[in-house]
Amino acid sequence: MALLSSGDKSASEMMYMVLGDLFRKCDSSTNIGNAILYECIRCISCIIPSPKLLEDAAEAISKFLKSDSHNLKYMGIDGLGRLIKISSDIAEQHQLAVIDCLEDPDDTLKRKTFELLYKMTKSSNVEVIVDRMIDYMISINDNHYKTEIASRCVELAEQFAPSNQWFIQIMNKVFEHAGDLVNIKVAHNLMRLIAEGFGEDDDDADNKLRLSAVISWVLGEYGTADGKYSASYISGKLCDVADAYSSDETVKVAPLHSNMMHL
Image (cartoon, rainbow, N blue to C red; front, side, top):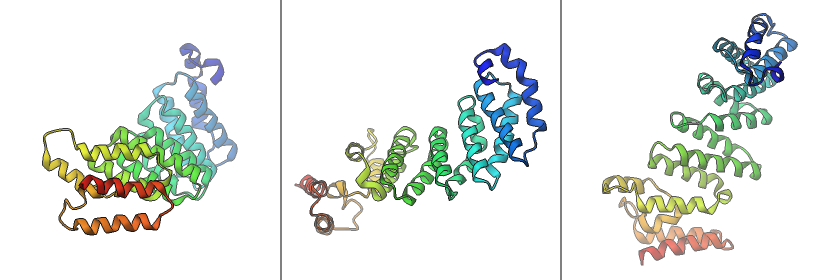
């Protein structure tokens, strides 16, 4: 049915009644009933759907996401990922349920959920979603996948950050838990943001921005700005970092560059 009516308004309309009946009559307490509901959702994602069918699909997805079954949750995440291409409002209705799926012990479900959250993110929900994505990143040991998650977190933060302070806090978390996996260009861009500030004639705002940055690359420049620590104390801490990772040329260069900025 999906193939026959894909992109065809007239053919799609001919199927509305059949699909509506299936949503109403399928027994969601059985595997076959849920399988049919899932196929209805897939069909709706391919045709030109009616508002009523989208409501029916959203209701079915809600039941899937609230289920204790990993398989049904996966079907709900997959179905929602298909429908947000048609209507982003559907995803918003289930945002909290989707985020909770990151806590599920099933790795396949968590990966599918991560992909959906990435697609759902916008300026109004970026803070909640990126925070949970970072928590998820911290919990995994696969460096290849961890690199991908860190990259997506950086991308979303750069695109939708509500403020420079929030952006720096997020970058600091990413560097803290996946610093070795982050592209060096990300660090350079962050350094430039801190050095240049908001780009407006607002020294107070720029100072607040710098005070919120806690990364070794810029400690030599702004480490004493809040008056809590002396330059010698900051330099000592940077040297400790270099000594701890004496074989890492990148770590050794960072304190050197930072201290040279004082000179």
